[in-house]
Image (cartoon, rainbow, N blue to C red; front, side, top):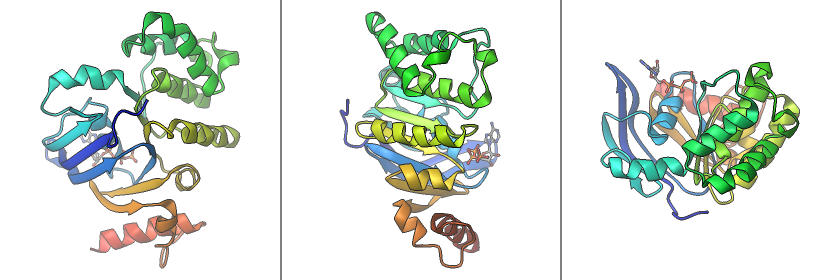
Length: 253
Ligand SMILES: Nc1ncnc2c1ncn2[C@@H]1O[C@H](COP(=O)(O)OP(=O)(O)OP(=O)(O)O)[C@@H](O)[C@H]1O
């Protein structure tokens, strides 16, 4: 259920790993809907996801997630974490767990009420198209199936903020199309932030897109607006040309 108009409010966010600056004064506000996060390797996408998922603390700046100040207040963290879903780029798992056990475990971590867990778990597994493999051990799944199990754990608590880092990596084309449909449904009420290198996923499923370069936002707009910036860019589609043209301009600046 949506309880806040601005799900994410990031102000002048700086994150450093020793002397390397990963996010460099980023401002970003996100409400309900599906938001794409694009950028070349090292642009800071995963770092932003980790800050919003409350697993990385910034060096400075303000971060409000689902009305909770996650930098200053540890009091807000537990409440915010219950309402988050997060698919990390690389996620750990017990290989002997079945898909169902894995998703159940996250339902328990997210404090889904005990009596609701069986229905919530089945629904999440069904939504990613894995119901026929629900009792398979994770170690027996293909890479794409494992990623779908990862998406299932991220949505099991029907999160208000869903953070998906490279969710379509390893999915076959048919699964990617199904996944985009799922994103559209989830984005009606929740704020969904999807980091990807697949520009066409953004064009198909996202209402708006943020393009990061060296820890800063160099573009925010609709996929159509990014496509319209394509003059002088390379690529096979208008949005790819927009992406490369905006990056080229940012590097030249
Ligand atoms: N644990 C870490 N220790 C040191 N530097 C790090 C660490 N994690 C990330 N960085 C650096 O921070 C910057 C941003 O990295 P980040 O992983 O957020 O980028 P990204 O946009 O997600 O890249 P990719 O598309 O390759 O996943 C990079 O320069 C990276 O080398």
